[in-house]
Figure: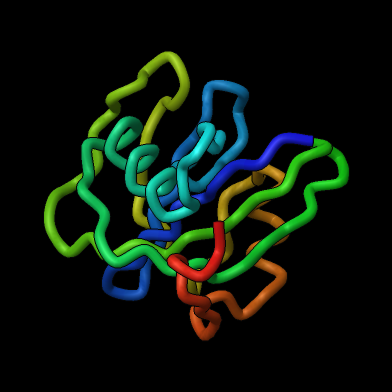
Length: 131
């Protein structure tokens, strides 16, 4: 079973999502590397995929993605400046700021579906307490 992070970047009532090359909408994110904390993974993945610099990571939700045989650790990151760029165009076709009050585009990647079943904006755990 793999373990990855989903980067939750909120700005002005919107969350950053991307259209992946497989045709599903997803958060930025990726697989955890050996000896890497969840926060370190989220910061690295956000930078690699979007060019955005995330700060102050907070674990907000953990999902068991049964269909994917993986676990997703959702990490909220502060990122008040800049706009996402397509740093990995072979993996993602576009980034957009999705209004949280509007329906999300379909299809959604299973981990994002799992996150949207929660009230993720009110959750937080200290990332340094979880590795």
